[in-house]
Image (cartoon, rainbow, N blue to C red; front, side, top):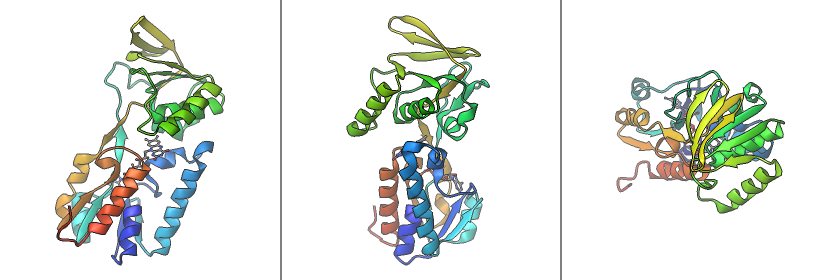
Amino acid sequence: MQAALTCADRGHEVVLCEKNERLGGILLCEEDVPFKRALARYLRLQSELLERAGVDIRTGTRVTPAYAADIGADAVIAALGARPVALAISGIDGPNVLSAEEAYRHPASVGDRSVILGAGLVGTELAIYLSMLGKKVRIAEMKGEISDGGNFIHARAIAAEVARYAIDILFFAKAVLIDARGVHCETPAGDRYLESDTVIYASGQRPLRDEARALGRAASEFYQIGDCVSPKNIMEATATAYEAARNIGRPDRV
Ligand SMILES: Cc1cc2nc3c(=O)[nH]c(=O)nc-3n(C[C@H](O)[C@H](O)[C@H](O)COP(=O)(O)OP(=O)(O)OC[C@H]3O[C@@H](n4cnc5c(N)ncnc54)[C@H](O)[C@@H]3O)c2cc1C
């Protein structure tokens, strides 16, 4: 969305394609989360600015290499995002297992007791959200601390909320098997079994790098931005979007 806006601002004729019915990407899964309201407002604002800028918005349109070539653009910017990484353990495909994104989208399908695998920002924020909905949540984390994605102020705020909702985080706990009643973890103190109705994995995102790269021949200039290069955050995604849009038509671009 930011790349399209910056391109339009700079006088380019822009087509913005989105395979889903709405613009907003992965962040749409959090639009009902009370402490993410500012994000929902940000996405609405970006949509309004795109309309106002006269961008040709094509939702429900999955771009394939053939579709991109048909448009006949001078430049293609691929911002395909990333998909959740499911841990390679037995039971991960069971009916009691959800990705963090699915849990955000369908909180009613999360049972009263759940275990989240991964204490990164996605896992801990999801635990806080589910606790706010009255569910009992535990987190199993392989490392010895919450992973703050490089933002220690955010991590302190998360830690305070984790304490407020009495969310139990089991550190140095490696999930090795999921069954119908919970998760088996290996810990330095021996094996632990965490009973739960639902197991949710928040174990990182896989960039859609190759899918994006496949669009590279559709125009003489090609840029890959955001999570499909490396899954990070909004600031990084919009910064790379701005840079790519600004570089279009510059022979000395990097
Ligand atoms: C659960 C979760 C919560 C997060 N919360 C935060 C947060 O609070 N703050 C923060 O800074 N970051 C957060 N992030 C990270 C942030 O969402 C991403 O860094 C950011 O959304 C990346 O933007 P993007 O446009 O690269 O990818 P995405 O937001 O994933 O958007 C990619 C879009 O491309 C579309 N697409 C894919 N393939 C095609 C195709 N072939 N044709 C057409 N369209 C296609 C997808 O449908 C999607 O809409 C969160 C991530 C997750 C997973």
